[in-house]
Each structure stands twice: as C-alpha cells, then as structure tokens.
Image (cartoon, rainbow, N blue to C red; front, side, top):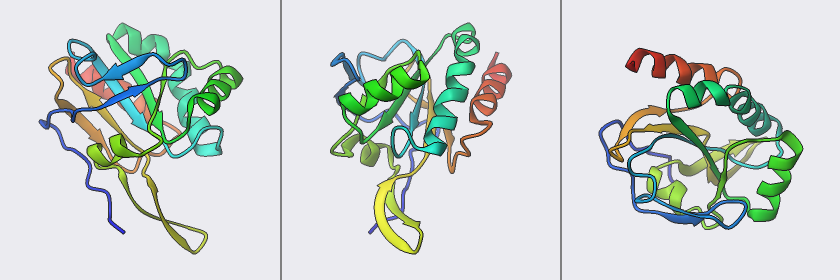
Length: 159
C-alpha cells in the first residue's frame, strides 16, 4: 500500500474524464478558463463528508463572488451522489471516480487506517485550480469543519 503524494502548486491538472450525478461529462479541458475548487472526499452521506459539503454549500455564494466553481469527487456512483445532493440541497456537482483513477492522478489515493484496520482509500484533500489549469493551492489533511472558510480566506488574499 502507498501513502498519498498530492499534486503541489504549479503542477498542471492531470488528464481526466468523468461524469457528475446527472451524467454530465467533465474533463480537464472542459474546465480550462474557470477557477475551481475540487474537493476529494471518501464517501457520500458520512458525517465528515456531510459537514464539509454542507459548509461549502453554505458558502456557495461567496465562492461565486470569487468566480470559483466547486466540484466534489468521490468513489461513489451517480445514485449515491444524487441522494447526497437531494438530502442536503447541494448546489454543486459531484463527480464520479469509482475506479479511483482521478484520485490516484491527483495523488490523494493511498493507505488509510481506521479502527485498527489498514486499507486503501481517498484522503480528504482539496485543490484550488486556476483558470490556466494549474494547481494554485493544495489543501492536505483537510478538516471538514472550517475548510470552506479556509479556502475563502485564501481567495480573499489573491484579490
């Protein structure tokens, strides 16, 4: 098993192709020209992931002021993502990475420990990506509570 090695500022976003909860296609090229936050999270409808997603939801208009899209991504499928969005009224798309290829490309897939068990999975990390398709900021070991405000504070510094 491997430890995660996330992309760092200055790196280009890796090539990826995926869909959101409604089957809309996304890839690294379709997002060029837009600044966005992509947040990797382990699983829909779990406590930490719900806290993080709901704080981003509550700050959604602030992100729009900064012309920053929000994209969530996890190994869950369309049905699970739709349920998560509906239950918590999330205004942003959730991308599907069932094969964890995108998580691996971003360097957020690796060894985890939980309740004495070791396994591989998604590490909770986020990336602020510039309109040029390069990483502006990497957020390692994200704490779900307060993450949205942390990113917004960084966006305010960039103005």
